[in-house]
Amino acid sequence: MWSLILRTAVLLIWFHEDASCKTVMFMPMPMTSHVILHVKLARAVTDLGHQAWLVLPSHDVAKGIVFLEELQVIQYSPSLNFFDDVLNPILVQPFLEGKQVDFGFYVQRMVQMYDGILTNQTLFGEMKDVRPDLFVIDDTWSGAKMFAIFAYRMGVPFAAIDFTFEPFGRRVPFSPAVTPNFFYPYGQHMSFSQRLRNTLSFLFTTTFGNPFCDNTAVARYAPEMPYVPLNMLNSRAEIWLLQSDHILDYPKPSLPNVKLIGGMAASPAKPLPPEFQSFMDGALDGVIVVSFGSMILGLPKEVGEDILMTAFLKIRTLKVVFRSNLTTPDPTKILTAPWVPQNDLLAHPNTKVFLTHCGVSGQYQALYHAVPMVGVPFDFDQFYNAKRMEARGFGKSVSLRGLNVSQLVDAIVTVATDPHYRQTIGRASKLFREQFGVPLEKAAYWLDHVMQYGGSYMRSAGQEMPLYQFLVLDVVAVIFGAAILCLLLCCLAVFCIWRLVRAHKTKLD
Image (cartoon, rainbow, N blue to C red):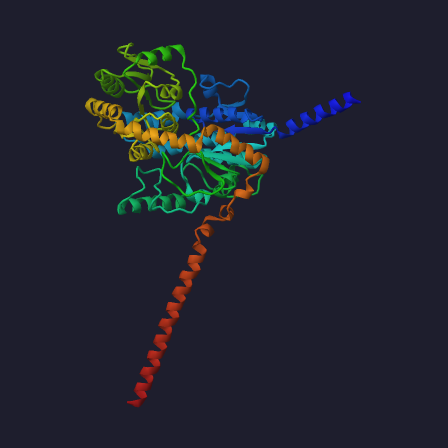
């Protein structure tokens, strides 16, 4: 009898645990930093008892850039390598060499790359066989938005991760007078000309759409499904996890299903590898941590050696950890490596300055560990990020074009020695930790939450509306039309009265 009861209890516990275990599939855009972020989030989700699958480009898996043990992976081979064939030759290298960037060609290559992914029926078949309960995509201002079509074809709900603020796409009421577009390095307090440009940029992108994504993409990539415009499909996300906040970034309006979670790359430190630990411990006067993102290792000689290395050697009191494939001129002062544990280095008490390209992940790691920054932005949102970092008093930024050794040395020394920067970011770090905790855990919590309860209760009715209704353009059109009609009727009445008066006067004469 007791044996039967015990077996029944065990079966009930097993059934409950199995029922609560969900399958989450992550598909980041094929860019190294995004892949790393999704892998970290996948691990956080598995810690909550769920099963995680990752859909990753094979070249990133082959690099071994992430620890994939205990995670399920579906690999695909994109027709173009995002960094080697698109980003580096078209944007990064021309910018570093002071040449004109061909943005039109960049868009063309991006469209080609995403077209190859979305038409890969073998890949879709493998994804569909998993039967995920939730599909997680990047909702960045690129073709990765179209990955929502995979979720639509599989008939599963999806969640979206982003770091940019797209109020029209998410149907968030806002004012362009105080909310800068990430295209522009503007702050909250804009001049009239800046407000004009900012407003026009929002209107332009809303009117003409995203150059990377055709709004009719569903018809091409999911012909078997009922047609829905891509922007309306994207607005069906169960939840948006926005890597933004009001401490590093500017305050922004939001909705219940748009969660500001801060930067998911920021987390408590782990022990450093012995090589880095001994170098950091021995740098009693301080260390500059230098990294220009997960993909940029090689720099032109004019930048890497003639400016950066020369500047580092001139700053005699500070040592340097430099993520680069360059050879160090002095191993006792400058440690170079193709990979560095960036988050853990920033957490070391001897770190004084973070020299960064102003990527989202790096900035939030610096904020989390209270390290002031010197920004050297290269492209896209990095100029916006550099501006907000300066506006908050967390550091200084310099322009790579026209940069010389003395300017860089001055910026680094100023940030390292002026207590204002460390005090300001130190206070902000305390606020951030208190309000956001560990962002990765917060993101995993919300994914778990929408799998349990769904996200419909957080949705605004505006997210179901076509954009013209959300912007009340139909109402404005009716009011404007009625006003014009009233004006015409008034003019007609005046004209008729004038004719009657004139006719009466003629009779009297």
